[in-house]
Image (tube, rainbow, N blue to C red; front, top):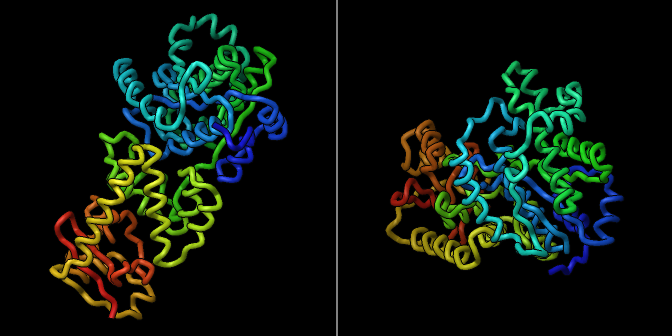
Length: 415
């Protein structure tokens, strides 16, 4: 299992996963001294997790790879309440039947990343303890440890109140239930660490405090940075919608294309976070410049797709992309438009490029097509209307392939 021999925090730090840690020296000492158990919670608000959840799943992966025990906590109970963190409005209340259906479908993704078994990773569900709570007993035994004054100071609550947006009493209780999850997992499995995104810091610290007050337990928090693309775009969102991890919601080919479309500046960081390639190999790929950087993007796409959909599906997606591009891009029957090389050197706005190619009649039509995921550059779906084409976008054949839909293609050739 572990070539890293308990260097858990070192591995996470070297790959860019750490934003904050409570008592880092104590946690590092504990992890180096023996096996620790840590968890991350996932609410069941949709039938699939998405790329935005991938960072935390990779943290559980590395936890196990460094010899420790991960818990993937399904929020069968907390999904009935809804986490207000980062939300502007209340979540839609889901029926128990929908929650259970979502939960069953979400579970499958974790088997791609974690080894489950009696002495391995654990799949838990907080409905096992939350759904049977006696309200009066819970208020007396748990609620008394929470200060409303302090709860009102947390960002997840404060932002909603500052904007004068309604926060239901149901949602207000979410942080208490999440804190109680930490206590229950400590009782049941000896879990000492909760991990999550940086927006969960306040909720996790609540759990640490509750564990100390109720059980005199020393618990720890570790959060990861919230990942956005260099352009500021939210991770896992495209013009076509969320990039889901379930193959029946986003095909392995479209998933591969999502990663192939990574912005140049993000390639080294994403290789560290979303693949298991050694850092030395990532360093080599990150050093590639210009047109060669596209090879690094293909490696990123194939490796990230293999993690979720398996190696065979990833290789098939890569081959399909190569074949589609080569059969189209070098076909003599494709129309070609010429652009001054000096203009391309300076940068041609992608909206104007599609107008020049005759694939759209105006830049406003190009914008509409981009929002509908209808335009592609070199067979990669275009999501940023501000993209600028440069010599870096030229293929090995010295052209840039512009496409509208599946059948309309034009080659942009510098002269």
